[in-house]
Amino acid sequence: MRYVLVAFLVIATIGAGVGGGIYVVRNFFGKVVEEANAAVAPKKPDLVGVAPVVQSQIEPRQIFVGTVMPLRRAVIGSAVDGRVVEVPVDVGTRVAAGQKLAQLLTETISLELEAAEHELELRREELRLLKEYTLPDEITEAEATLATASALAEHVAGRFGLLKSLYEERSAVLPQELSEAESNKEGAVARAMAARRRLELLKQNQETRIAQAESKVRVQHALVERLRDMRKKHTVISRFNGYVVAKHSEIGQWANRGDVMAEVVAIDEVEVEAGVLEDHAEALRIGTPITVTVPSIGKSFQGYVSKVNPQADPRTRTVPVKVRVVTTPLGEYQLMGAQMLGGGPPQVWHHAYCQEHGPVLKAGMLAQMELPIDFPQQALLVPKDALVLGANRKQLWVVKERQPGDEGFTQGNAQLLTVETGAAKGGWIQVKGDLRPGDLVVTKGNERIFAPPGTPALVRWQGEEPLPAGLAQQQNVPPTVGIPR
Image 1 (tube, rainbow, N blue to C red):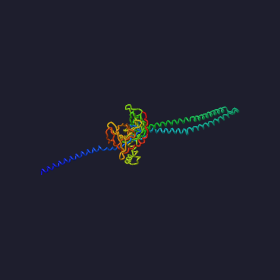
Image 2: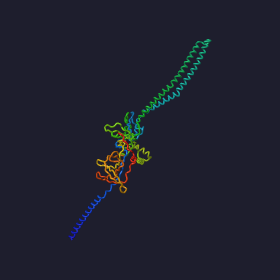
Image 3: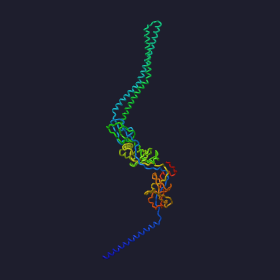
Image 4: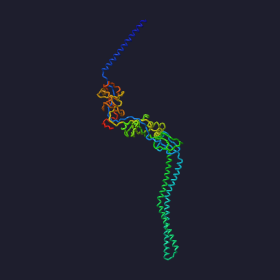
């Protein structure tokens, strides 16, 4: 029995070895046959996506890093000495032009102002009485006195003439009576002359007296305005709309003239300042539209070049450039969130939220912006996806020959071409090399193309990628002469 079992095991082992050998031989020869068939059969072209080379006008731009700066900044101090009794603002408070930042003690100057205002009213009343009553009454009285004196002088002169004729013709009047009548006549004539002179002086001095009274009113009015200005200087105010970024005063503090009370910045509009290399500064133009991106908040803003400083920094050889940007209010979803948190009309919460948290752009933030570094020029553009980036060179596959393929596809030989890149325009980039407008470049599947150096690769495609609207409109634009630098 033992020998039968051993013989059975030996036979089973031999059978397993023979079967495994047959299986290995069969698989080896099968792979060899498949590889031989594959080598003999033609290779199927790689399926790729293509896009034409476009000639378009492009403005070379470069990204510069700048800093968000407030449009205006004011360090506001006290114009007078005094005790601080009120500070209604704090850091982050939005203030309007003319809004109070701090209040100094004004009791003494207020009392002086009240007394000066009453004195001004007195002067005005004196002027009114002088114009309406005093001068007219004095002139009327002088005219009446003149009329009375003139009438009396005529009467006395007539009586003197009668007595003189009686004395000369009939000697009916004593010499003493004649002398007395003559004296009365001379006195009456003198009084009439005095009354006439007084009336003339009143009329001549009328304008002078009124001018003097008016001058007193103006002097007192100037005193009142001076006191009002002094009291106004006890109120420290903001001169423009903005936000308080620093507070340097507290209630009870003594403020000397010139002491800083608060610092206010205007950031409803901001300027992003950056330094541009002197080689690129010539291409900058005031009013050029610029897109500003703030990475910290993930937002972009539209602005324009507002200032190009004619004085370059001699240490860095850069030209300071400022881009004006208008800050935007809360977005629709932010506004809805603020409304849900507090309730009430959206416009009310929009105003309250902006006052509490301030604008989106804040002074001191880091910003990025694309500034022109050269004048507009004609260039050949290809999609950025067409580039095959190597260790130290940039290449792309160009289809030089086209012919109809199977199943509605077009096929052709793609050649690997080394190019130089330039400025970008959206998803397209400038290239320099053996290219012409209208040449097809591989944009999709170029990473799957393998061919020995200098050997074209057969590819196939179905349709071309559509051009963006901006590039499609510029296809028939003739080349323009570059502006000389």
